[in-house]
Image (cartoon, rainbow, N blue to C red; front, top):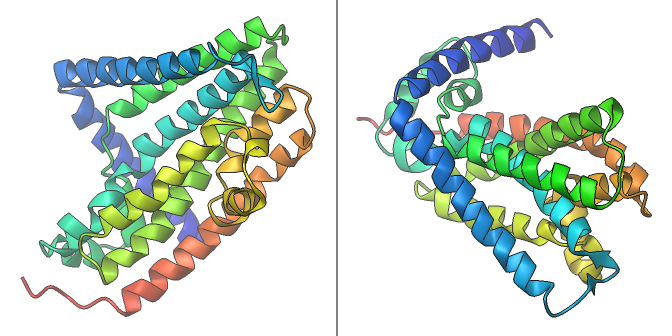
Length: 265
């Protein structure tokens, strides 16, 4: 426990310094946020066009699907903010020999790498996600009170932590494949399935989205709870899913570190 607390303390110190350096480039910071918002608006238009040809998707109307999309985007914002640097482990840190320096630090390499994440698009994700979520709740006549807002804040943060664990697990391939970001991104794009109700997929896809890549806990189950639909209470299992997947991630990373061979550069 003492070691965990020490690593967390070091992470927040390094992450704070990373955010400060990011904020120094204000023009890039603002442009990054605006560009991400425009990108997500294009996705919104796609959903809008989809519902021009149908009233519901497996019992979910436009605003309910928009709620799924909003919750997912907030969680993706946290992912971009805290875990974006994990994609650089293979092609940058290990390939260029920088990982050797990281491994010598008195903190776990995961902490050192995570603290360097500086993705400005994260704030675009969070802003547009919040707008879509609040807008859909208003249109669905769902009361927006403190309890609802706290639930959304908590469950989207946990959703981001779950996705972060998935990325970290996939990142272990970097110890054997330097261009592992291609592998990571290919698997990570499974999150696109969680933009729509879980009920539209066959049992195989459902199994993957619940047990292998548990994106269902990021959007579907939380949205089901807010909408008072079946399976909504499963959303409260999300913290346990986050703990389980991070336990697996750390174990796999420690195993990968034992097999890591210095680049020699």
